[in-house]
Length: 378
Image (cartoon, rainbow, N blue to C red):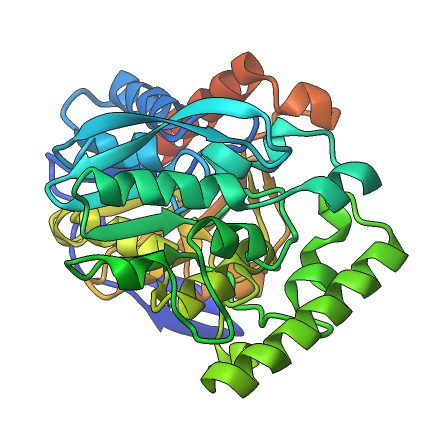
């Protein structure tokens, strides 16, 4: 069988002329369904379903993430290293003990594990109190234990403090632009992993866009944005760093901008994770990719879309299995061979995200999908 055509705006988009051979190799790399099932669990269920139809298949599963919550667990499955415990405080200044991951001189820290929105019930009170200070304490711990490159995964935070708590914990002085990092005998590199491109303030800034989901009232959000604007102006006057022109400075409640002020850089979370996992090699050697996530929509930076575009470089078609699909067929065809929702019947959101239901539904869909492919592979 040859998969070589997909309808795209009434034109035929040419895929590969590669034929599915008897020992077809399928790469299964599904992002977690947030609040429901992890990436490894989804991958395993789909692999089992595919093999139940055709035991001759060669299946490779790759846990995948985008630099948000769950990224460290994904990374630790592939990248050799060890966990380090650190005592710090969460976003409401409550004492907590968390772990970050070390590989050689690199330290990987998941901000959501320390200041994650899942640690609170967002409301106007938590919005006003939430601080990123504890994340800075974890960074300082990693440096003191010998790390010279700190990679911070910025997804899933519950703070909107413009990164000021983080800066404070690392002794940043915006009058001089100097911080704790400048007192070290050896240089330390900071890298922020995010696929958010929002500026620091304004209509697309961290307060206006992400403030509501973090519990902010309209008046609080307006005040936060004004404070962020004033802060950015002062920083520019003192250091000539213009946060507003740096894509991603508004990530994680302004933590993206804080990292830049400390001399760090921002990079795509998915691209960096994919690089660390050596995903390119897996894509080059497979015949079909099966990916997915909880909700596929038009939001930029989605993992399935990024995987599909990587696969297209090697003329490998991609199928997405998702909890819900909120993208038009024409748009989906630009990147995917096909996109499916795993739901078997009308169902409430609460029931749909039940772990047992999700795993059952995705196994049924994957098995039926393989049966269809097998009919064309005779």
